[in-house]
Amino acid sequence: MSRLFGTDGVRGIPGREPLTHETVRRLGAVSARAFLRERGRGEGPALIVMGRDTRRSGIGLLRALAEGFAQAGCRTLDAGVVPTPAVSYLARRCGALCGTVVSASHNPPEFNGIKFFTSEGLKAPTAIEDRIEAGLHEAGLRSAPASGSRPRLVVDKGAVHEYLDFLKSTFPATRDLSGLRLVVDGAHGAASALAGGLFRSLGAEVFELGCSPDGSNINVGCGALETEAMRREVLRRRAHCGISLDGDADRAVFADEKGRLLDGDVLIAMSALHLQEQGLLRGETVVLTVMSNFGLVRWLEGRGIRVVQVPVGDRNVTDALMSGGFCLGGENSGHVVLRHLAPTGDGLLTALQTLAVLAERGGPMSRFRSLYRHTPQLLRNIRVQERVPLSKLQDFGRSVAAAERRLTGRGRVFVRYSGTEPLMRILVEGPGRPEVHRIAEGLARSFLDNISRRHPTCP
Image 1: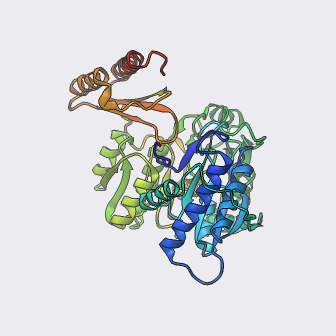
Image 2: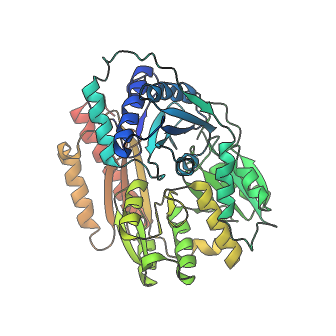
Image 3: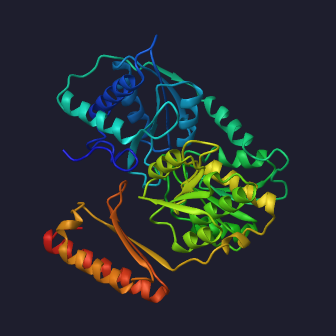
């Protein structure tokens, strides 16, 4: 059996393995026991905090998990439809055994997923995921007897207000958003009922889109991966800026008043500048992933800020922040970790802190887009049926090596399979857009040709 956990929990299509009712129930039981062993059993039943996004399949998966948790002797607090970072916050706030989120984040609506948080609000470390997988194998993933345990489920739709109060407390007490015209795209996801009200409570005039979930439209034509509608609305409304969240609201990207995109790299640059000038940038260090633009790296280093680069995944960013005692890091996708405020990436928190920088330093938003010179970059995503190991795609490997030689000293090539979607990602960065485009397209053709020769029906 292939590995169950990817870079951000378990992902799949509900009704198919591993997201069938029985497998999810067993996953709940085994994961609860793994967290109990990690903590040590205390008095009384342990509490697990759960939340989900707006996908129609979420309720069934949540109930299957709750059955498994009950089988392990745990109670479940159901916070309802809430952002993933809200579960991280509530797990800490409630002294829970762990937190669990049913969401596939930025993935299309037919997908769903499950991810776990520790009692400290951190994404479950790989060691616990390995223990859960081993427990599933020991139990016999598809042969264990069904449980007679009823879910010990307590619904608390008011718990999210504690999270919103926390978010507001992070905004400077001497500032508000009065006079700001703001477009907010909730991706028809977990924050679609919360985001507009949060920004209005601080004085902003808010224009909402992507805030009408119907169970099957999450991330469709909206959200952090499809920002065109948000950027058009910024121009139509003559807004000062726009924000796009993803389906579970753990990431955010912006648009300036001209409708131009400000990705996670720009938001990190804004926070780095502001924290450094306030003397609050711990260790004078920022943690980035290998996907961040080289222009940002050079700009940070030019300001005397050390850059630590890690593999893709916000958990890798968080691990590096914790081990080094740093406070700022993130990904160009919009996952920004403000470790001095929260243990993991949070789209609403990122948006608030970015707007705080705007309020403190003055606009327009477009001035921050030109903080550093962006190195031309192109990312090609190719859908695949199977993640064929790159070591077995020798012709493609030779094409990658040739491209790397061509860009030596001038750029870079980075290829990997997505950990959350059936995609091959090809990133090319170089001195000019035409050359970057030619190389990226050539690598895409090489990958498709090599795959088709190995598997005539793929990708």
